[in-house]
Every structure is written in structure tokens, then in C-alpha cells.
Length: 162
Image 1 (cartoon, rainbow, N blue to C red):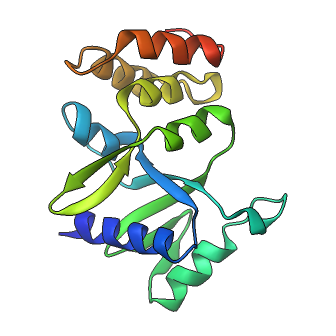
Image 2: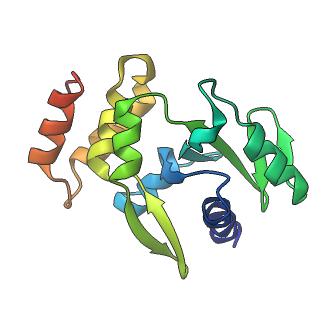
Image 3: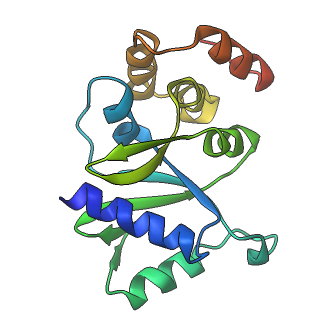
């Protein structure tokens, strides 16, 4: 199961200190909260070790994965055959999304997943607000587990709106 195998690798990266923390985001996160949508890759928000310095560099991730035989292709690393994109947290919204991620289970593998309220907020960031992402936000808004009060507080705190 490539997805479960890729999750095992993410957990190893965290345990070995290559990344401080992570949360699955993007279309793969939707699998846990609503109807799945077709996607090409696994998007992973990451917090890099503070020793990485003020400049954001994925060098540690690329070196660790290369040492284990995983190939880089464009902006992805092929982990267990699954194109995986590591996205360093760019701001407080993404930091909060990672910090509040829910630990779930996928085929017996623990995985940290961005909760629906933060996924919606991430989809509504002006520079990321595409038609596809607005559709995904609408799907999540209809989900039975959505906490509307939490969503409203997140949107207000980060200056976003539906």
C-alpha cells in the first residue's frame, strides 16, 4: 500500500529529527474528512528543525530521502512510488494547521492530518484561492464533522472570509 508506506516514511523522518512535525494537507487530507478527489501527489506541511537557520531549505529532507534511495522528480520526492511534496510552513496559519492536526490511523499507520477547519482556511488564502480549492472548501463545509465556530474563529484570526 504506497500511501501507508509513505506515511511510515514521514513518521520515520519525524522520529529521526529530519522534520520537527508534519501534517498531511491538500487532496489526500480530504480522504479523512469527506469524499476523496483525484490527486496526483501527497502534500505534506512540515516544520523544519530550528537548526535549519533563517533561510528555508529542504536540503535535509532531500539528503535523508536520497540516502534511502528515494528519487527527486521536479518538486516531488517519490516515496514508495507516491509523489510527495514537502511544503515548509510559510506562516502562522500553516503553523496552526500543523499544531492542531489530528492524529488518525490509516491501515494501522498513525498519520497527522490537517483538520477540516484549517484545510478550509488554507484553501481560502488569497494567493491559493483557485476554483479547485474553493470547490474543496465547499465540500468540507458540507461535512458532518465541521465545527463552524472553530472555523469562524480561524478565519477571523487570519483575516480570511468564505
